[in-house]
Length: 492
Image (tube, rainbow, N blue to C red; front, top):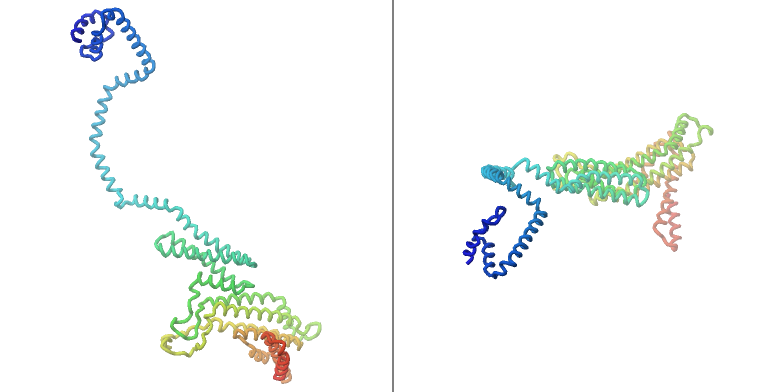
């Protein structure tokens, strides 16, 4: 029914002003819907309300178009411009697409070549440098810690050295011990790193710097052994540190570890300890140089025969010098040997050890031409005695007062007894010294012998009294102690 109605109305389309609008098509859905609506209206509606409705709809459409153009005129203009250039853009897009398509094979071959050159399994210098750089970036904190090890080691050693030089309290001693222990731990850590990574240049340089610092630490430890007032505990700690710092000094001097001949196993540390303490003893004795110079003056006067009261006072300055000399010598010599025996107990000869021992464990004479060296302590007391004998031989003749000479000789005997408790008694050598100091005349020799006998008697009595007091004898045995004194005096 719609088609006949469209045909009926079609002639009127040309009569109307259709220059500004297109003619509706017959198959247009909007035209079909509107023709269907017209068929349902009455004649009165078509003549009265329909024109008004169409005018209202047209006005509404015009307003909507105006509002749309006001809101979206920029987009509309832009779309119109782009639409005008679309005719030239599409050919260009097609051209570029063709070029891209032609370049894809070259791109694919280049990517395959890049994959072969810079793949994970390929060997390339640039990749190696990049891997090393990335590895360094990931471990930069560890590398920084390793680089700081020599600085930390140097700081610990210098701090311990300063604390050792100014050691006078338990706090500074504890600080020095802690610093040296930290330094040894750091050195052990550096040695472990060098053992694990011997081919790494950085680790080798750090190990070399650490060895230089440890040489400085060894120097500080040796200097501390020469210090005054060192105690047994401090000396043992210092020797223990030296064993860790310089283990080569702790090697045995014996020709073979299997030999049973008399030798030493304290290595060079024993001799080093004795030399350092001897240097301290000589330094303390050198502090008596003002008194020694006065004694030398008295020696020169005695040699020149100046025996007047005004020129020579009978050796009073020499007596002062020898008394102070003997006090320092007795105290320090006993302390040195006793500390040595406490620090190096294994260096002492074992019970039953003999240099003439033979057996399968000892090499033949032809095989072992150089016998093992004895302990450093074997010759050290003899050196001390020679030092004391030379001093007495030079200055004792200056003392002319009998009581002063007796006092000095008694002090020498006490010194001999003190070393005698450690196996270094040199009392019998004093008799030879007396013979050297005695005169050429028979009367002088007899007086010297009598003087020596009296000194020995007094010394024996005093020594026996000291032994009885030290033994803790009770009060009930006082009579027997007096009788023993009388027997000792009679025997003298």
